[in-house]
Amino acid sequence: MTNAIRIGIVGDFEPAYHSHFATNAALYDAATRLNLPLIVRWIPTPALDSTDALKILSRWDGLIASPGSPYKSFTGMLRGIEFARSRDWPFAGT
Amino acid sequence: MLKIGDADSAENNSGSSHYVVTPLSCSWPNQREGGPKASGEERLKILSGTHLHSVCGSEDDSEQYYCNYGVNEEYEKQFEAAGLRVSARGIRGETRAVELPGHRFFIATLFQPQLSSRPEAPHRFWLAFLRAAMQFQKSRSKQSTTRVPHGKARAKAARG
Image: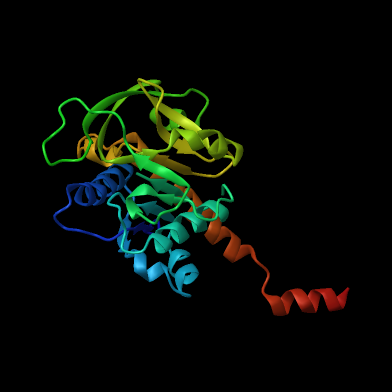
């Protein structure tokens, strides 16, 4: 059995925002097609504006920068992107 | 990346002299009143030889948008000099996607592939992203199981 793929979405989840709902749905639909167990969690941007940022970010097998700016913490969002860029972590910004 | 200390997005209204992200100037067809500037579908060209092209498999594409801001074209040369490559353009040449060559998967798009993904036809972008994450997980777990524990490595070094 393959380990679940863990995807962290950096962004401030708004249930009423269709793009956010669609991001979750598209990931689960793609995982079903690939027959991959998947875990998706949102990482609020203020959580990355802290000394724990590296620890939080390195838990995930792939990182996504969510749509929906302005973000609660622009610095937190930039940290997430910079982490993926400089450490060769799979990253999608949509 | 660009070594611009006060680079910012215009929507943050910071008073920065370097807004690298600015409001989209185009007016989208079928723009909704009260909705964002770019909402709905737009045709675009995915540039051949790019990672995005290998993911999406064709040059002519059309994607769903829901946004107000985009890359300030005045900074495009600087982005490219810093290593980012444009991988998709709108019909008037506007930047629609960028990527980082040499990175295992680093693609940013102005369009939102999640908006046109369907349960019966998940978008290729997300299939490719999850495959990259799966391979990354495998490479990480291999690394952690093949790494010689510190103690053992030291003992071996001492022996000879």
